[in-house]
Image 1 (cartoon, rainbow, N blue to C red):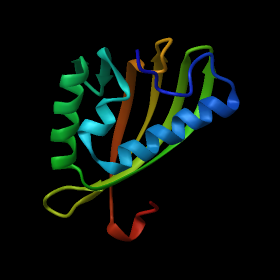
Image 2 (image 1 turned 180 degrees about the horizontal axis):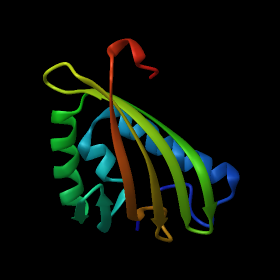
Image 3 (image 1 turned 45 degrees about the vertical axis):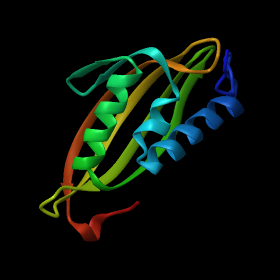
Image 4 (image 1 turned 60 degrees about the vertical axis):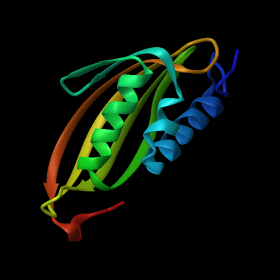
Length: 136
């Protein structure tokens, strides 16, 4: 059986490492690479979507990054315990019409004993911004 280090239970150092690894992976905008951090039967809520399984995650991310151009993400550890991590994040992107957005949100993550994320619940809000207001 493969593992995705670091493993739970988390401490400050390992929870921070897990957050950095997620940020780095998502910033590649590679749906296949990102999807491999999740269990085969992962459960997601992303905004108003309910996504089940690694294959649906891959499909969701493919569509996301086709729509959200020049995507750049920053995550911050908010809290952790045992096998759970909470993060706050913001990311910037533009649509096909050139309108920039900053999206803000919070995620709650739950990991299995092998370090793969089995649950991800995300609440996200979008704010239209001018290109000159970009921070990331």
